[in-house]
Length: 76
Ligand SMILES: [Zn+2]
Image (cartoon, rainbow, N blue to C red; front, side, top):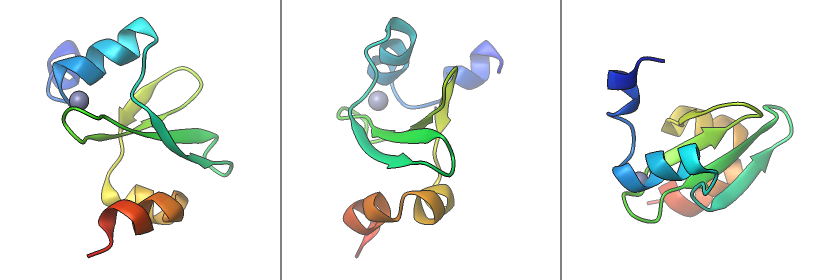
């Protein structure tokens, strides 16, 4: 991932959180994905974290793999 792409994700607080090991709060877990879903409390961005990296999670991914979180945060 290039630095410029990374700088467009989330906000400074959550990006720095990932880099410093102080990631946004975990809100769900997917055994199928071997991943965890996190939500930044500052900008509201959803992140999916794996063993060695983290990236933005879109609503389709959240709906498919983290249905509990989808129901909580995306229900209208
Ligand atoms: Zn953020």
